[in-house]
Length: 395
Ligand code: NAD
Ligand code: MG
Image (cartoon, rainbow, N blue to C red):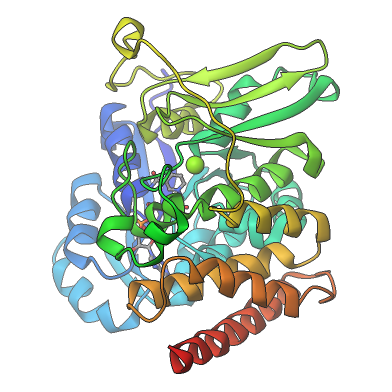
């Protein structure tokens, strides 16, 4: 501060849950007086995208869907804010000169634009865990080549990042990812078998987008986070533990060689992790709820159940196999998630679809370039669609 120069930033996925929270943090830290917003991107919520662009003075607003171009252009008429649409426009917006880029598009759709920002050397605040699950080492390598920093936004990974001592990486024995257990923590498989999207998306602690809310209910989100942690912190699979902690107060922990465990705690509010990623290594003053320990009274822990929540077992398999298995698991599950949301398959079938595709592609060659990742992703989607069609015929 003090120089008067505004920080240039972009937000990929500004209209989502993370995007809206990011703009809330930006507003708390001075809004357009402090930040020069280069690009924001959305998909279908054009009204919100245009309002955000006007309020924060974005230079360009991009919708991923070309069908929404006319509506966006009209909503921004007379403002001087540029409107653009389509996948290529997303990649171009991500490539625009911004020192810091929030990567908060949901799913594999976020990979190409985030890679573009990384390759250009921006600091990447990474909410889109799918980048690391799908592209793993290739994504980490792209960030290194670009020369920017990779700062996790996922609350568990932010907690680990904050609990890692400088220069003590060699003394890290394990990391412990906490999981809320979601709305079905105590449910039997029979009870979960015919739940609807409405029931599954009601998360007990966090308010989030639809995909990650359903992923919390199935614990598929934790499966993604195990693989995300492996790549972010360069861990061996056996160093990654998961513990169910229903209150979501401890966001995750790092265990060291001397038996010490360092943890990061806070209210379940993504703005803390977003703020940390924005001002790292400083900590901004944020208007989020403070923990009241007397009121909390207790924190509970229980071992995760890989029988009721097979996604955790699938993550172990993907970690053990390496190669493109993360991309395969993620892509198959995205298709299964769409089918569940459309009422075509049941809640438990999502993991079955992912597992069947992973088995079929168990010896798929590892990726040496990003194109190999996209190719494996596409094959996994085709196979998942075939399995879902077969399940529907049998039902
Ligand atoms: P969301 O569904 O609320 O928002 C997703 C954003 O991506 C929106 O801006 C949407 O317009 C955009 N988008 C959707 N489809 C697109 C497409 N095909 N092409 C381009 N853009 C598209 O999701 P969210 O909950 O904000 O999650 C975003 C990412 O952050 C996910 O990877 C999620 O796993 C991760 N994350 C979210 C939270 C959370 O609290 N919501 C916590 C940790 C990690
Ligand atoms: Mg998380």
